[in-house]
Length: 316
Image (cartoon, rainbow, N blue to C red; front, side, top):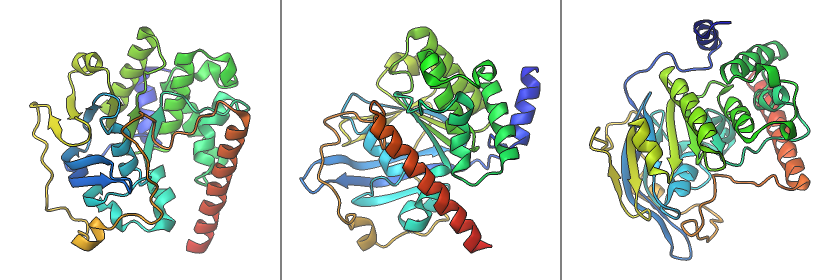
C-alpha cells in the first residue's frame, strides 16, 4: 500500500482534521493558577494557537508546562482568566461532558502507558472501545493507523516484545485513532534515543501536515530549533514569551460564552494544595510500573465505556 493511499484512507476514515477554519483553536487569556498553599503555577498567561499549527511549549522543569496541559484537559481549573478550546469556554463544560471533551484531544506521554496484557492492536483499539465504536469501525481505523505508524507487522505483538521506539509509536497511534483535532505530546522523546526521537518527531510532523493541531511540551531546545516551528516559552509559569515568527495574542472576540469575573476567579472545589512546579510530571500521570495500577487504569476505562454507552442510550 503506497503512502498516498494510506493518507487518503486515513482522511476518509476521519483520522485527521481536513477542514481547517483558520481560527484560534486554543486561547489562554490572562490565566492564573494558584493553589491553596500559595504556590502560583502560572500567572498572567496569555497566548493563542491557531488551528493546524505545530507549536512547541518549552521551559525548564518546573516552568509550568504540565500545569498548562492539565488546564487544557480540565484536570485543573484556573483561579482566574479564561481558556477557550475549539471556541468553547472550558469553564462552561458540564461535568457530565468532561470525559467526552477529553476524548476530543489526543494525548500521549513519554512513559507510553501501554497495557501489557493487550496486543498492539488491542491497545490502540481500546481507545475506540470506550467511545462505543462498532467492531467494524474499530478494525478499519486501527489497521489504517497502525499502517501509518509502520506497525502493521507488530499488530499481534505484546508491548514487552517491542522496542522503546515501537512502544512510543503504539502510544501515538492510540492517541490519534479517534481523529482528534488537537494532539498534545508531553515530553514524547524523553525516554528515546536520538534515532527513535527523530522518527517520533517525523511522525508528529506528518500528522500535523494532515491538519491536526500539534502541541509538544519539551525542555529540549535543540529539537524545536531543528523543526523550525513556533515556540511558546514559559518561565516559572509567571510569564510567557512567544517566538517572533508569529504573533500570539489572545482574541477577546471568541464566539464562546465569557464567564463572569466571579466565575473565573472561583477556585475549584476540593482543590488540592500541591507543588506542580517542583516536579515535572506528565498530565494525569499514572505510572503503570505496577500491575495494580494497570488494573486500575483498565477498570477506569471500562467504566468510561459503560458511561458512554449509557449516555448514548439516553440520547436515543
